[in-house]
Amino acid sequence: MKRYDPQIAPDPEVWKRLDEGQKLTLVKEFVRRNETQIEGQSEHAAIHTIVENQIAEGDETPVAEAVARLQAEGIDRHEVIHSMGFLVMQRMFNLVPDSEPFDEEEYFDAVSNWSAEQWFSISKMDDEPNRETYETPAPTVEEVAKVGRNEPCPCGSGKKFKKCCGSR
Image (cartoon, rainbow, N blue to C red; front, side, top):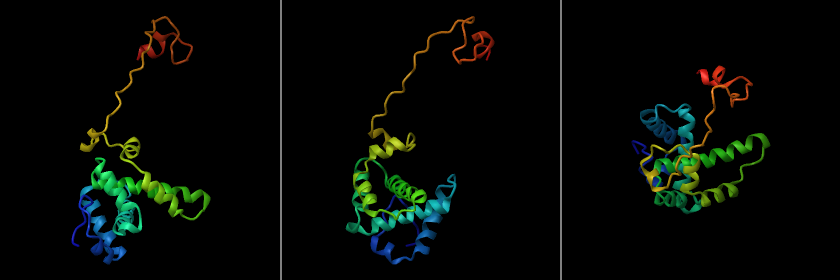
């Protein structure tokens, strides 16, 4: 394997034959070339590698099935890897304060039940082309009563509106 591209599934057998260092190098090169705005590129590459390892395991974990399902729900493969990476990181962050062992069963349950809708609700995918598959709620406009210049300012300062927020 000469290059890694998260949009194209690596052959699981080829991926499993690579050692972790080779996998990380391939993913880091992709991140360096394509995701230059990301801070923590090494950590980002490590999460990609973890998820790709789980996908390569096939039926041994529910991850490959979840990836296929999320792609069918309209998320591109790269974003699915980010989504699965989110679940990995969520579980890892939960470990730190409690010093509890990683609960693989809890993680695999979360993976099995994870949906595109859940990922869209927490991610910033407004510029993703596949986002249009899901309805975006219309922005709400809060009705605000007009404040007279000599009325108390609604910010709570106690000043007249004209001497406070109305002067801006």
